[in-house]
Length: 273
Image (cartoon, rainbow, N blue to C red; front, side, top):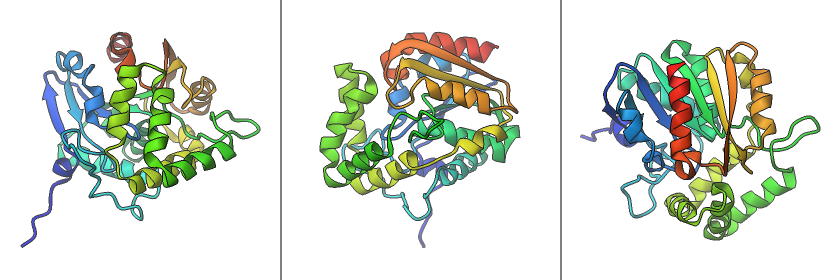
């Protein structure tokens, strides 16, 4: 008889901390739950904190590439990940939470909140973006040719792309760049390519007007992945939700790694509001 792993087990989900309010932390592309480690101890003092790994990421305990449960046919958009998030919350008996989503997880949280708004008390989006390709009236950060080149490089020389991308995404900090580089290399190249296509070729701008959950959008002042145009655009389009935009005076796409004290101060204000 074949025993199927529960979703919480396959996603390495765990809950820790004390308090009535639950905070669910969703990581971005190439990351895993380990990259939240600098902010979790402080959050645990007043809140229950849920950590998990998306199935495209290497388990933070693994020393080799993982991603055995990733199915590129099933996961062809962020909607499939939103379904996993909702199923995970149901399995863990989470009835209400504050969802903190970094990068792609920000839009996943938005989609999940539209499907089951009663589960989400607040959304906190860090470096999130609904679209990465520029148009005449939208600045996503990349021209279409740049995106095609990124995908070509991931397919032809994944490790070379990671080595070049990590310091740019992080903002130049060498220690943090190495951490992110080692984490993203735990992905299988074909999985990385499939997820990168979902992210960089996706357009989820039509999702924004459907969000009704109160939302705080956090960006750094210099994020090449999500330029400063994006959070203001998102706020403008979220016509049915109470929103606020907060900019952190730091560089890069990973403030939870490079400026965790500043991020914690900001999170504390948002959680108490």
